[in-house]
Image 1 (cartoon, rainbow, N blue to C red):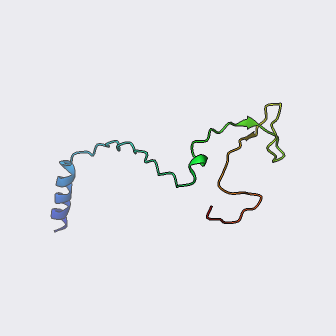
Image 2 (image 1 turned 45 degrees about the vertical axis):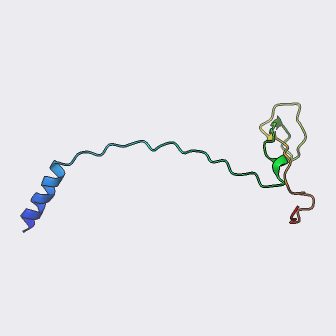
Image 3 (image 1 turned 135 degrees about the vertical axis):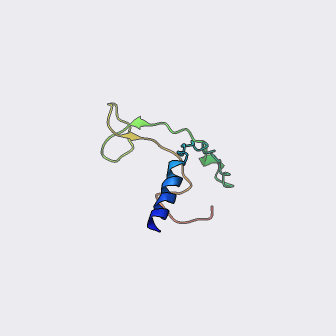
Length: 85
């Protein structure tokens, strides 16, 4: 019985066609709708500049390893309280 099972397995393996990898279709980017009231925050141009290593946002006259940019966000970080507006 064992010989018959191994013979069947060998027969299947010998006639099998090797699998060919098929590349996946490229993912399509889906653009989400901009939430009402937040339109001014989308589409901002971010301009990176050299800045100091002290954690500040001051522009540096020299080229540095640190880059900073400023963007507007819908939260006042000086008073980060949740608001519906």
